[in-house]
Length: 274
Ligand code: NDP
Image (cartoon, rainbow, N blue to C red):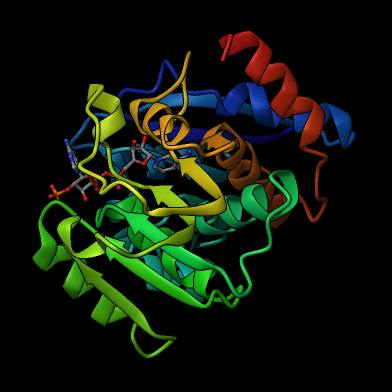
């Protein structure tokens, strides 16, 4: 019997996940169907219950339901617990297992696809929202030399950094506080690129050979990657690989098979014209 999976969000029509998972399933000879499901903003729990009742085996969760999925889960992985958000659900009888694969997706994209191991690197994370929180612990697990979180609202960055201080030395503050410092990896986890806005990054933050990574993706260069390129950064990467890699991690959790991501990522990029 064909197993059923879906991604829940609002809006959801734009989601690339059905395309990605359908390709993974074909490549790994897995008998599954993966759909996009729109849930009402106040109807996420009901939508999940109905999905489980109809035989759903697992689900991905996107904006704005990741925190609600966290609360709905009856069991949480360590990484979901640390992220405070869930993007992958596994239904097992009456249990709902919640996991978060965003951080693993980011790390895999940087280390495997961009070819830059995080160990020993000075990492700058821009933004202190949900996406930023989700990638901190998986990034720290790779052994960077340091991690600094910079945010427009500096108090949020300080609070976020201190909530991870038991894992490693993490600092947080304003954009102005990074003036005079240099970083090997600069990750944009703000939503500034969504509205076409640039960030007030001091000149000189990119070390020689640095990687600039924008979690945002789409057609054309994001304002953050444009700014990085103009400051001499050669290695500029958008978040499309993170999207594909977080999906591969979810697929692995559900099916026990790790799909190849290279071809799917290349096809998706060609489709987006990015
Ligand atoms: P949140 O709304 O939780 O957080 C937004 C963050 O961006 C806050 O830190 C906010 O700062 C900051 N911000 C917003 N506008 C500006 C601006 N104009 N200048 C400076 N800072 C700004 O969003 P998420 O954390 O959920 O998402 C962030 C980004 O990550 C989005 O672009 C999203 O698409 C992307 N993403 C990509 C994924 C992928 O697979 N590639 C997965 C998940 C997310 P403040 O606190 O001061 O308001």
